Length: 174
Image (cartoon, rainbow, N blue to C red; front, top):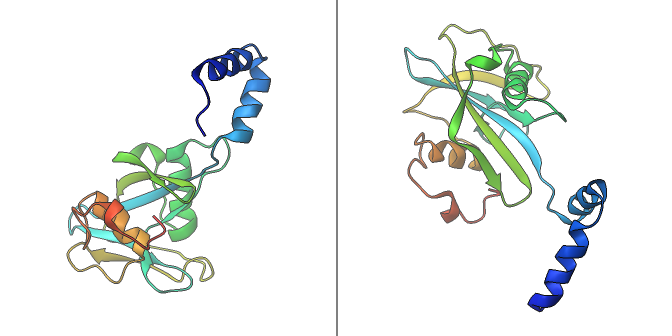
């Protein structure tokens, strides 16, 4: 149903006469809700390998990622998640935002993607619960990836979906 232009104008005028805190609360109630996560694409500079994790239920390898905490800076949260899941500690200032940095998933979350490098001999420490295994994989010989990981890497020209438009991927929770 289309609202007549004049009626919509009255509604906007009334809205903008409300106190700022009331307007913000109304927008929060009516607007879409998104979770914001950070995804890490960590590579080795010498041998061009990428860090992947095997997580439950173990049907494919994925990237170190997780949700940001409220008021947490994106790079700080990205480095925190990387350490929590793999034991690999990188300084947040060494992480570079991807281009594009934000990947918006229609099902209600946004991934902020960060790139970084780590030495080939980096030691991983996984807990066996959230992550079964962490290891380096050659970029040209990747294992079976989770569908979302394959699509995300493809956006950046990596892996089997490199160069493919993520919008063409029906059936994936993208």
